[in-house]
Image 1 (cartoon, rainbow, N blue to C red):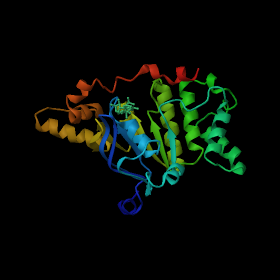
Image 2 (image 1 turned 30 degrees about the vertical axis):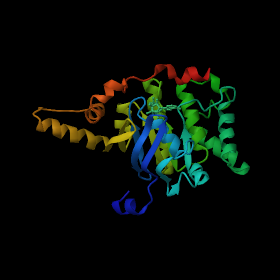
Image 3 (image 1 turned 180 degrees about the horizontal axis):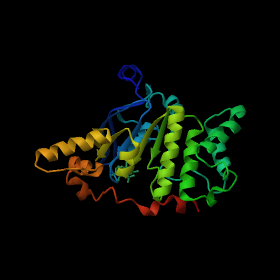
Image 4 (image 1 turned 180 degrees about the vertical axis):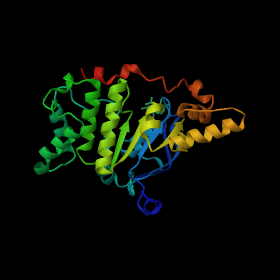
Length: 284
Ligand SMILES: Nc1ncnc2c1ncn2[C@@H]1O[C@H](COP(=O)(O)OP(=O)(O)OP(=O)(O)O)[C@@H](O)[C@H]1O
């Protein structure tokens, strides 16, 4: 995308001063975020950073009590249906029904999202193909591996042809091969459709490899934002200025640097991934 196009096309998502509290807990605290149309944007942070709460406000599942959220120019507080029509959402919780086949699961989403009867079978077949589930489409979802379930959930979210796809920890609990496969499918669909992707993850290595830009979130706020390369170079520059000979910081080092000791106090760590949330076991 050229600079001129970027300045004229509306942002896919803008959050200004977004706040959400649960009692005394400021889950989202003055969140400022702008996601460009067509990019893969990573919202990164440890457990409890506020990522899921922010996503729920953006998807209109939670209200926007303070601040503003716009999706392709539509206000999430005032134009909820318009925003929902633009979004695909894969939540952390299981969204596939174990007792239905892959195809039936995707058909269900197609009906919920008003894909016309005439278009439905074709659209369902195309998204199943896009996530490589054609040959398994008529098997019950409870026979799928964890990676296949995640790809099925991706197909469910894609069947309404969203312009903004929101993925809440799409690869949590998957083995490295399944994680790579999920990302390859996300990228292939993104390239084919030009859709925007907002993804949350604890996995810094994935964010570094697959996201165009990332925001590092901690305690409800964004602490750093940029391309993974920019964020790493900026920290390397500072470490060099402090006398380190050949600093090669990772994205996780960047996060530790911006979040400071608060990360350990909170008990959150990027490696502290809850293995109990294994996708495969959620289906059985
Ligand atoms: N339904 C709820 N009731 C009370 N507090 C909540 C609720 N949901 C989230 N919180 C609190 O809000 C804060 C942000 O939680 P949130 O789930 O948004 O973080 P997260 O970054 O998505 O974490 P994770 O990576 O663990 O999913 C946390 O302190 C959490 O305990």
